[in-house]
Picture 1 (tube, rainbow, N blue to C red):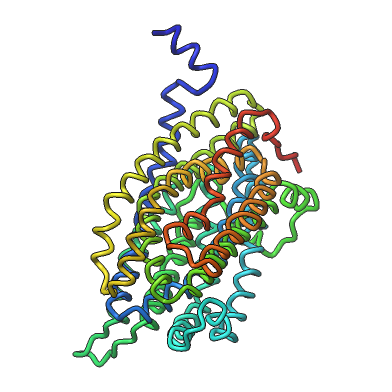
Picture 2: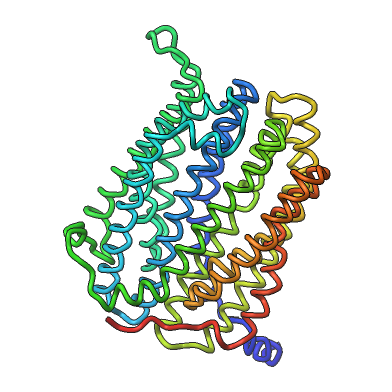
Length: 462
């Protein structure tokens, strides 16, 4: 038994302490993602009661917001790569400066998005769908959304980068509070409260509910960081200081590719929505329903990726490269198991979830078809997510990952989905498979990359 364990230990990590540490990071992120997707599902169900125009409008507007959200995730990832490695080398001052730089970037980006969204909501919606009724409803949603960018971006980056020091609790606390506020405010604003004279605001009410939740999130995040967080001891006075040239150089070398990669992911997601929107509001509505369940069934995927990025980043920071390889293979095996579970969940819960929505028979048939495709996709999604957003990114291999994202999203997925969906008019099952074909390709490509020796890039001291 010991001999077998010893042989296995050459390839993966076998000590229980490693898996216990991983669980301490995975579980809070898992529950955070579960709560977030639960909120999204309830939002979709509530708005879905208003009809297909409303559900299409809010879904497509949120696809635009997803560009910014994923950019924030990219900024978080860039900061997390550096912060994890610097925390591993016991450089807390540099970790704090990394925090400052990440926050400065998200404040600038959030301000730009807010102004553009407030000025051009109808033009933004017209990029997704030609239906004037959907455009008008979506523009109402976006006008409120313009106020959400800054508070959400700041709290998102704060709660994500703090994971670099092993603190995954903040994100969970924020999500729990957001769940209560968002559901309550959504119900009040969407359907109204007649006895106090508050009218039903429909899609606009959904956006107002989200705004209330994001403001509360920011307040909780700031109070926690200033009053209760004891490891990093971050203070916002660093936001008015310019970062050092060395830190900017390392951020560009290891962090910027992660921002570009995640931004392209967000743009690709919105292009997918545009393609499906051009296939009709039935396809757009069906996709909105499928995405909600898909994300709900893959909540563990984000936890695995987050834990892998933090732990491998700290290991690389300590210079323990051989152990980083074994940790990477261990997380890959975990992601395969998670992918199988997610696939089974989507396959068996998909049809049930579709019954929760007030939709036409045509939309229902499209949703069932897309749900079958999703059951295949989520298996590969789990593997490529663990590799691209966790294992290899934690090792600093961000430039290679950026190139892989560009090639497989923009040379394979998007063109193939466009041709099948808009030119050849093939069934929705194959359109969705085509639009996510990059997940399948990257699962294989990045697994091969993990088996080599070129994916570890340590951050330089600054």
